[in-house]
Image 1 (spheres, rainbow, N blue to C red):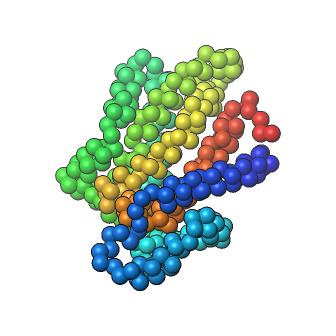
Image 2: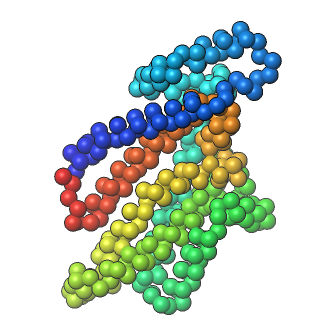
Image 3: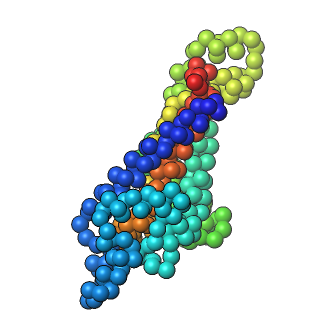
Length: 305
């Protein structure tokens, strides 16, 4: 397995390089300039700003210099926040993005797998119909609707949780639930269908024939096979979760990376946009690698070669 992981890590390098080069060219070739919004700026000052950020150099040279800085961990300087580097901005906003996203992922996996197991074990019962009905509701309800509803109920009506902001673990509950509810509903349906596919497999029948308790049969044998569709879904789900976090951070006024990314895109803050794109790309590539490893651990038919 170690050799497989090392090979995959080396294989991620050209993928990340392609993402960086393509993103850099798309951003830099877009019309406009970071300093267009500055009205009445003297030509001399504009020339100094372009020289400071390297915008007066050929595009190929700008790309090469950016790649050199990226190799050293330097993401450049922000044009919107000239006194701060992109590294500092990301370091400030990253915890407020990763913590709610981690809570959302834990909520989605915990609630979704539990609901799917109960629904599969009690197939065609009231529990099954009720849980799958709630799952359909969770899939149908968008986050930008669920978020304000949760804030209205838990924060503004019963004052159980803060409606937004950042500062304690209580502030991540509502964003985490809002972000993870859709995925919890989808995972519940995938877990149910996956377990129903393996319920008549030979190894499950053998486990029951040996007289193993039903709890052991469900959790050790059926669940392991039933989680394969869930693990397959986790790759794109995590990618969508990271994108959706931008909306949730706006709803709950969380000082994460999302608002910085939106403001940087509108203000043509090239280096800040690139820094966030690189960060998200690295996270998604590494998480997809973990998903592949987990898939191999769950399915004994897969060999790490």
